[in-house]
Length: 142
Image (tube, rainbow, N blue to C red; front, side):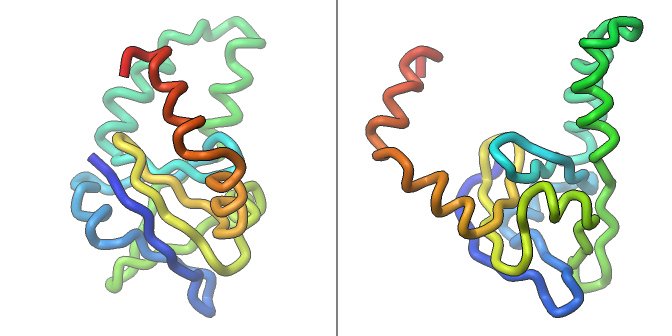
């Protein structure tokens, strides 16, 4: 499980590092892909291949409308290759999608990690009060 909020910056070569507290739970390597609301999703590779891709296999192959989200999601997914210090370079298409230039916020969201441009995260989290947002969990029996 992934929890918490961490502030980081891309280094001079455009590399980033998942915080150790989060990376320790990425036991099998990980993948990064486009997420919702302009962030990037990070999934443990085992979870992504055994659960996420398994669910996507239920999408009808010969239904063009159904295949579009699958194509868009999987074509933007890449397997992370870290250097010896645990850093990796985000592909430019993912940086563009998320609007990341330098400062980032990395958040743990249960079964995934999200990477946000710091300004986007600040705007996203300050748009409504905490109480107004969490009351919506009632509709999910939480």
